[in-house]
Amino acid sequence: MSWVFPIVAGTAAGAILCYFALKFMGRRNLLLAVERCQQEVESAKRRGEEIVRAAEVEAKARFLKEQQEFDRRTATAKDEMREAEKRLDKREDLLNLKLETLISKEKAIEAGDARLREGTKALEAQRLQIEETIKEQKNQLLRISGMTRDEARAALLRQLDNELASETSQIIEKAVAKAQDEAQAKTRDILVTALQRYAADHTASATVSTVDIPNDEMKGRVIGREGRNIRAFERATGVDVIVDDTPGVVVVSAFDPVRREVARRALRRLIEDGRIHPTRIEDVVEEHRQEVEREILEIGKKAALEANVPGLHRKILDLLGRLHYRTSYGQNVLRHSIEVAYMAQIMADELHLDGTLARRCGLLHDIGKAVDHEVEGGHPAIGAEICRKFNEPEAVLNAVAGHHGDVPATTPYTPLVTAADAMSASRPGSRRESLERYIKRMEQLEDIAKGFSGVTQAYAIQAGREVRVIVDAQSIDDANSLRIAREIAKRIEADMTYPGEIKVTLLREVRAVEYAR
Image 1 (tube, rainbow, N blue to C red):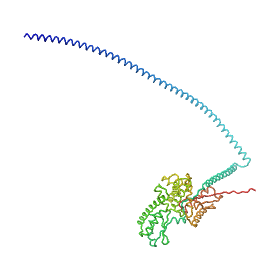
Image 2: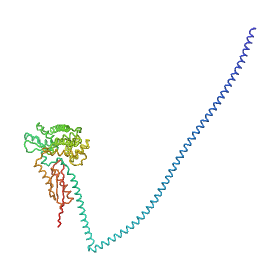
Image 3: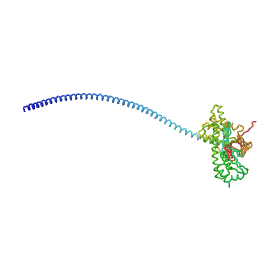
Image 4: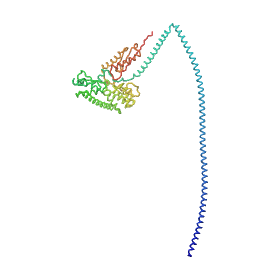
């Protein structure tokens, strides 16, 4: 047991030593912790002081910046206020000036009103004085002349009538002189209107076609029972069929050359076939109508190719083909158009103009003749409207519309086409018309004009496209001259058949002859 005590004692001593050691070490650590805390506090104080100093610096900088911005805005606002004050001052000055002007104008108006009232009073006094003077003069004139008031009035009216008649005569003379000047300016027209309006006898060779018939039995079959076949044929074709006593011939008559050609072909086919009844007639007519329309388009294409005019619309090519069946005094209109195209090109080339454009103008110049029997108006205006519809150039439009002088020429190609048209129509052998038909047509025009009362002479000119009428100036006055000219034109429309226009010019001449001895 002796060894236990030392162990216990040693253990106790060790424990005491550990206690004191731990206590010493704790105090040391505590001192170190306190020292570290004091250092942290000092560091925190220093950082706080630095933060405060930085905040103070930043606050001072921001204050200075805000103060500068405030000063700037304040200065800008002051400048704007000064500008506004200046504008207000100017407006105030302007208003004052306007007010002064209005006041001065008001005073001037008041003064003018006063003068006007005074002038009105003076005028009224003068009017009364003038009336009194006129009254006195009338009384004096009545006493001097010995006439009554009614007699004086009648004499005054006669004098006024004479003066008015003299002034009317002067006005009429001026109007006649102006009309003569205008007519003289238009005498340069080279060509006459080629609107193929024929008299009945003259158009016989151009508006009818004949179809041979083998015998009278076939003629009866063409007519049909109670005329039903011939009525069906005329209804289907739009032509007139004349069946008379002439042996071996049936006459087809129509102003439309295409319809006449369709009817001629269809009738010839029916006669060759022998089967003639309304249903068969409609089928044959429709078949030949389609055949002729195809031929028309093909003819138009060939004409455009021959004249070297590309780019034409299909409808214009069709109209060119229709001109193949149209004649003017025996001259084929399509061949005439091709000739005009070439002549216009030659002249344009000589003048250093566009020959291609001139050729186009010449080919299309008579395009209106293809439909002038269907559309109201002359063929130049109709043709120009057709070309305008299909966007032809302005030079072409003017040449088509003005190649007869109906509208002024605005391009050099219009007079070229006019000259080429005249050359093609007047060259030897281009047109034919018997002397008897020509004379008969002239006489018919002159006889219609001479049939009116007061007409002394009538002359048909321009190949029957114009008639000049001379009336008696003693029995016909100006107003009746216009009426007679209009009635002559209406009589020509009623008694003559033609697809165009005839100009009626009435002349009333007054000749005053006196001798000085």
